[in-house]
Image 1 (cartoon, helix red, strand yellow):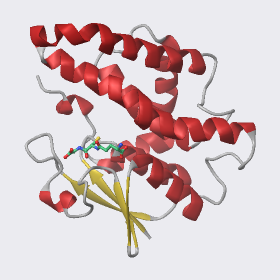
Image 2 (image 1 turned 90 degrees about the horizontal axis):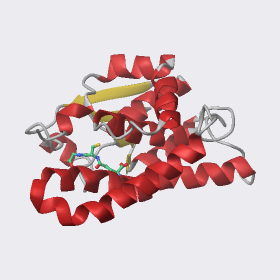
Image 3 (image 1 turned 120 degrees about the vertical axis):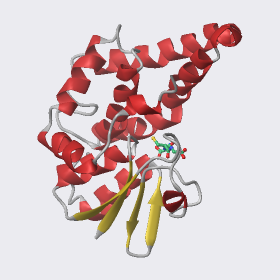
Image 4 (image 1 turned 180 degrees about the horizontal axis):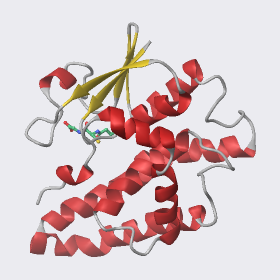
Length: 211
Ligand SMILES: N[C@@H](CCC(=O)N[C@@H](CS)C(=O)NCC(=O)O)C(=O)O
């Protein structure tokens, strides 16, 4: 059986939501943040990076959101939540499974960090804001008129996108993006999402933003 190691207020909420959507048995272990920011020593001991999410499954320890989602769908998914290999939906699915963490997270996080620099960050604003606009503009265009990232059904890619948008919403970065805002509301209204929030303990991304 899978154990989901859930770090408070973190990306591991993606995995709790995923196993709730699949309706599979799992063990949930909750870990508080250390100093309000980092994973605690017990979490660091799970995997060399010490980053959430991590799952364990028997002797296996697996880190990285996208890899965990793929693993769970392959081993426990019974064909659910991902398109058939070789279809056009699968081609889109593959890209969106990777582009959130691989491309969009960098400008998103840089924007927050550069903002913390105050006046010292001003020389970087043009480049960073340009990249944020480019990436979020792309997401908005792609998600306009869509209820899901791929086709007409929930897939693994929705778990990837939703976490990003939750952080962006709390950082007041979604004001000009109505399609992304609408989509986020649809995902958060799902019963399995609500169960994951209820079971998963603390999930308040505002706590991660230095004041
Ligand atoms: N690309 C990685 C990012 C992992 C990551 O940065 N996780 C954060 C939580 S959202 C973390 O573990 N932070 C605590 C720390 O750095 O100690 C993934 O998607 O799994």
